[in-house]
Amino acid sequence: MLLWQRARDPQSGRWSLPGGRLGPDEDVDTSIRRHLAQKVDVARLAHLEQIAVFSDPARVPGPVADPAQQHRRRVVATAFLGLVPTDRDPALPADTAWQPADTLPPLAFDHAAIADRARGRLRAKLSYTNLGFALAPPEFTISQLREIYAAALGYRVSATNMQRVLTRRGVLAPTGAAAPPGRSGGRPAALYRFAERTLRVTDPFAVLGPPRRR
Amino acid sequence: MLLWQRARDPQSGRWSLPGGRLGPDEDVDTSIRRHLAQKVDVARLAHLEQIAVFSDPARVPGPVADPAQQHRRRVVATAFLGLVPTDRDPALPADTAWQPADTLPPLAFDHAAIADRARGRLRAKLSYTNLGFALAPPEFTISQLREIYAAALGYRVSATNMQRVLTRRGVLAPTGAAAPPGRSGGRPAALYRFAERTLRVTDPFAVLGPPRRR
DNA sequence: ATAGTTTTAGACTATCAGGCGAAAACCAGC
DNA sequence: GCTGGTTTTCGCCTGATAGTCTAAAACTAT
Image 1 (cartoon, each protein chain N blue to C red):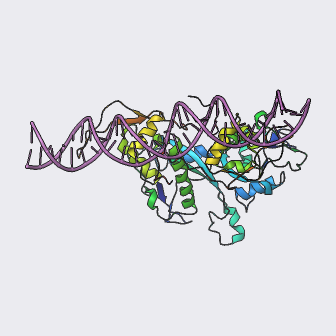
Image 2: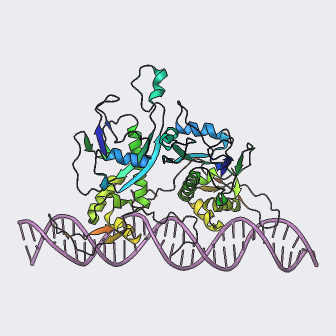
Image 3: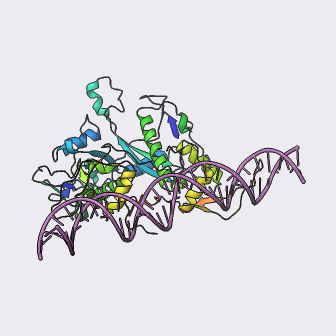
């Protein structure tokens, strides 16, 4: 998770999620992209999605001592989930760092709750969409993808099953092309890629199905 | 869909979704409840859920002629999906009415887009959650539930399959209790109810499954 | 050549969605 | 009281899918 350390005083020193104020002539989408650009290469953003609005009147207490005036500092946040591939690690500003989602430091304000919601959404969508493309590099082995899924989902994933399921769904496709021979022995892995690199839901639960195309 | 007809001038006369301004000391959740209370009995609200933020700077054009000043009327909306049972139809204010979602009148501002998103969310969640409880009365027959699902989903639903699927998932439970004998002949239907009346997702796609409890 | 390691493929099981048709339970009319 | 029509319910069958396990394949190192 991409965090940066606050320098100024509401909660100075605390780690927090990147973001910033909504400008007068932009929508929240372009706004979050603008703010993110100060931390990462926005061109690598493979997915960006609204999570929720966080609007507790007290979520960001102002520095004002008089509680009667705190409403003047009211801050309502629109939280986003943004994903970048594990590809290569681009240069980051000094105050910014990637942190493992399992062991996050204490976060400023209600950012821990926001992070939780975002991770839940990622977990869910990884399961019923092809969203993995936003985390994986252009080409990868099944093992690499397994690790990415395991890290994002938070639990161990079977490579065999993942391969079959994602292939059957048409999400994953072998590049035909071969493998990068191993470093520590073992059969060289085949390379795969995501068939599509735009979000697609896997048969949105026909459940009580419309005609059901086959 | 619950709509009301605007009386005042930005788009006066147009139908629009209920809502209003966020007060200084409330979060968006309590705010939407407060505004809804002016239209319906909020106690009947069985489900309420954020959809998304709509923040196009031009989504609500101000009455100001000078476009350089339009940003002064900037309105950012947090859209919600709220559901009430088909139970009984409570009294509504004169300017307010329920309208079939299939054939909506032209809506004010970007409310058509909002309604679309909300309906999409409802459709999705009906399929993989027990959200039907928020639409159905406390007790109902399979036929009644089938009609509710068909109306919400927008396509024909098989009563047989729906019954089996929802029962297997533990979402639906027979009240044991009998049936209200028919009006036009036919076997009297058994009564069912939702096992739980709080939101529960149906096995959030084990897909690349954690241990998988059975 | 042999042992060890990693990846891939196949076999098997259990579950689930969905379609179809028959049986059950009621009403109306002769 | 029996018959036909209607609505609901139940059971059978098929196809697809997730998941586990085991064996084979393909490579490195000794």
